[in-house]
Amino acid sequence: MQYATDVNFNNPQKVSNIANANNTPILLQDLLPNTIYFARVYAINSAGASLSNVVSFKTPCALPIVVAQNATNITTTTANISAAVSAINCTNLLNFGFSLATNATFTNATNFPPPRKLP
Image 1 (cartoon, helix red, strand yellow):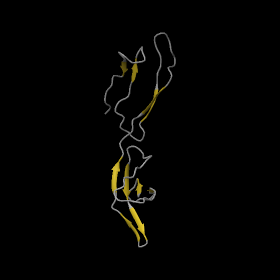
Image 2 (cartoon, one colour):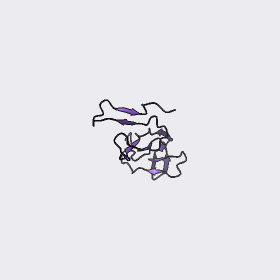
Image 3 (cartoon, one colour):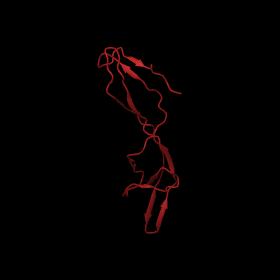
Image 4 (cartoon, helix red, strand yellow):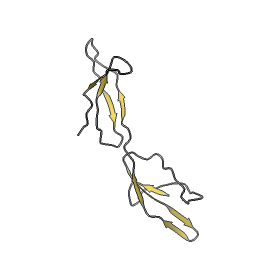
């Protein structure tokens, strides 16, 4: 079996040979999020090689990675906070903000800005 990110299979990835290929599911791993893949099956015997039709699928977006930075410029009534957000190959980040609370369970937290969908 081969899979690639282009329909022409210019740089295909090959999955190991399978002894019994009759409806044997193949787990493809380490795929990129939000990416269209094309796949086809091949068979080779003493008479030659054959290729199947090409099928395609798209992987969904992954959860964004958010890393909060330590607070800086802390005074008795203010502090600067920041975070790094990575959308991992997905450009449709729908919301971003901070939550502030006086306890670790974030009971009665205040959101800055309030949660909203981005355009």
